[in-house]
Image 1 (cartoon, one colour):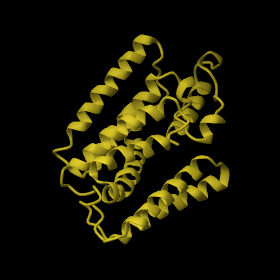
Image 2 (image 1 turned 180 degrees about the vertical axis):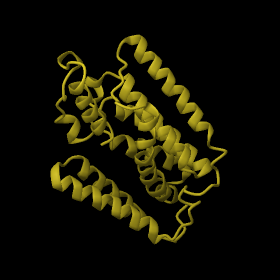
Image 3 (image 1 turned 120 degrees about the horizontal axis):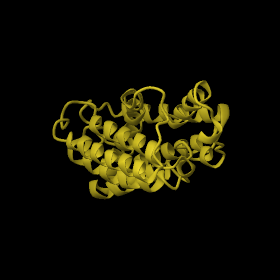
Length: 237
């Protein structure tokens, strides 16, 4: 719970302001997008720092780490099932030049940043004003709304948001959530047909997405490698 006593209107204002900045960044392009994304990140960090919380309170300590590790195993199992289903359905692909493990390691910091915003900022404020149980649902809705209009990611993040917020409510640790988030995101990127999730773009990027190429139009060798590199960059945002 938020350590420094803040009024309910102040907390609602921070939640609304943070969400508006995030949405504004997702629905703009070019320099404006970069500026708004920086403003959203800075605003969230400043608001959390103003509370003067401990690392444990924002989920960055060791408390709850071992008890919440099961979520990583669950996510790994689900990711494996998705990959197998994608392979059997013929929709699975391998859009990475290097090992999947290397890309998982590269994705985890971005997943941690997203979970910090969702749980350490949004959930902890909502917990104060609507109660812990309702905060789980509202945080999941905000997390899902940030992935609109992607028809794959919006429902997936609603389900994941409910799980992650409930796990955070119980254990208050972000590290397993970040790993689970990365596992599931990369599994979706590989197993689900690209024309559905459009390289995991959200916001205006989803609407304006144009494929870098198709496998049938790429010859083996350097052209495919270049296309795979572009695909990875888009998946990682």
